[in-house]
Length: 114
Length: 114
Image 1: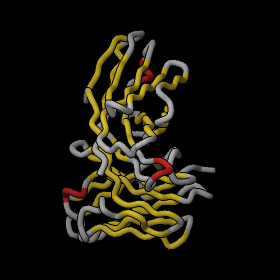
Image 2: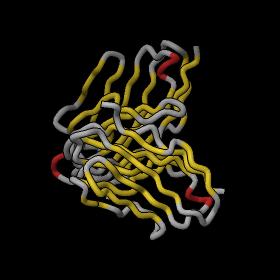
Image 3: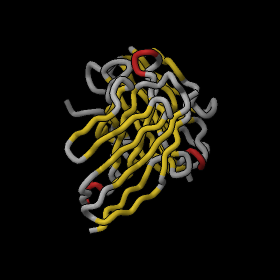
Image 4: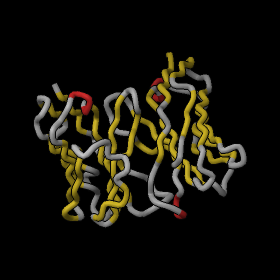
C-alpha cells in the first residue's frame, strides 16, 4: 500500500478563495482523521470519520471549514472562504480500528493564505 | 475533555547522552499513550506506545514509562544519535473504552549535538 495520500502537497491562495484538500486513506482502514498543525497550537484534531460517517467535528474551528467522506477511499476538507490565519499544515491520518491503534499520517498539505 | 501537557518544549543533548521527555494528562479514563516522532518537513510517525495495564515498555534505545496514579508518562531515549533529532509528540486516548480520539501534547524539539 502507498500509505495515506494527500493532495495537493502545497497550496497558495488568496484570502477569500475556496480551498479543497484531498485525502486517500490506507485501504481497509475504518477511521480517518483531519489534523491541523501550526507552531502556536501544535497538532489539533479537526474532525474524524468512522466508516465514512463523521463522528466528532468539535475541533472544526468555524463554519468556514467543512469535511466530507463520500466513500471509504476519499475525503475532502474544504475552507470557504479562506483567511490568512488558516495558513498551516493539514494532515490526514487513518487507522485500522478504534483504540490502541496506530494512526498513519499522510505527507500533509502546506496551505498558505495570502 | 483531555488535556495533555508536554515538557520541555526544546531539548538539546550531546550525542551519546540520554534524553527524557515528560507528559501529563488530565482524563483518568485515558489508557493508551503513544509517542510520535516528526522529522523536519515530514509526517508524524509512531515510535512507541504503552497501554495502561503496563508500567514500562522498551524498544531498543527507546523506553516509555507510565504512572497512572500521577497521570504522567515519559519517553526515554538512551545513547542518542544525530538521527534522533526531531520533534516528539506524546498523546493520550481512551482506547477501547471511548472514541478513537488522540489528544496530542505540544511537542518537544530534540536536538542531538554531534
